[in-house]
Length: 288
Ligand SMILES: Nc1ncnc2c1ncn2[C@@H]1O[C@H](COP(=O)(O)OP(=O)(O)OP(=O)(O)O)[C@@H](O)[C@H]1O
Ligand SMILES: [Mg+2]
Image: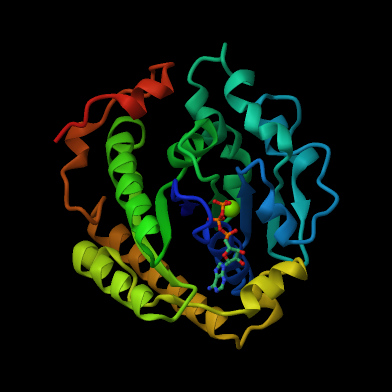
């Protein structure tokens, strides 16, 4: 059962768009799928028309103020359920300040729904705070979407370095499944930046990029992922191919036991999850 976190610490680079469309596609292909909205902004929750925002969400689950069955919501798709976000998720750090191993609460909370779901997709906020750390601890696969422009490229470098450093410490089985290029504008700068990122990151980049497509924001306005509202849109067809690539990488890795596309021997770098200071895990010295 893969748990796929969609994360990039850069804001506005199609994390939510990617998370909701991947979740919708897996569900439409007949897999029982759970989408977890770990962003206090609640964009993934809104993407499925769950408005007004629910009173209880994943925050209440994490602070043990509600059970999964009290917060889980159905969506328009039979196979897709969502753990919605509420604005108080931005106060998770404070709420869990006295809790041992606050970086583990999501992983533990997902144990019950994980038994039923074939895929779990987690949408992360654009920061490496406690909600994202929890997502990266709970995940087995990481998808990093990035736009093809300069500042996004810088964000990709920072994200890559932080995730590698952190996962060695708190989740050695987390695998960077791939980096997804999104070219919202088909201009020369975007094309050149995409080429530079491909040259640098090589096979870590999915072959299929997501083209700029006005139907993506239009679908957002209709509270529906573009792959459901406009299945033949260029972005929808591209997301279909990306799902195939992600599945192929999950399948190949499970056969070869390759843990990381970096080829690092991360088995040797396992660390105990017993530290209660998740922040030190992020900020600690980079080993290797
Ligand atoms: N392929 C695309 N073509 C055109 N616009 C796109 C495409 N993908 C995403 N967008 C637009 O880019 C904007 C940012 O997307 P999104 O909200 O998914 O980013 P995000 O990384 O989740 O942002 P945040 O960091 O705030 O959570 C949205 O307005 C979305 O409609
Ligand atoms: Mg988002």
